[in-house]
Length: 156
Image (cartoon, rainbow, N blue to C red; front, side):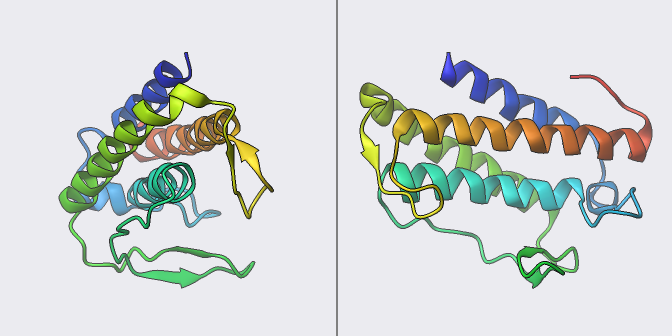
């Protein structure tokens, strides 16, 4: 059930980005937000690699060196001036999802295993999987609003 829910959100996110040009993927259609679909895709690959590889598999993931900047609240976000072509960001995101699927196949054998987690304190595998689904659900909602503002496309 967790796996199919995660795959649903991955597919929905990709659908929100489907068929758009590089320019549209980089577009900031909401003046009150710095979010772009391409920025969300960069973030999603980081979510995949951090939670699946770093936390669940306890390995050091290979993060693509996207250009970032410090936000007003002290965090960081992806700089749309980054010259990485959208097709490469897309390929990197798909690779991150494939890497996560490999980890998922191994960790779901013991979903109650405790995993060190500096963000939330020690948690079990199931908590982390649910957190990744929560991340996707939130960002698919963002993607839905962005896509509607770009070209009027709506739906799940």
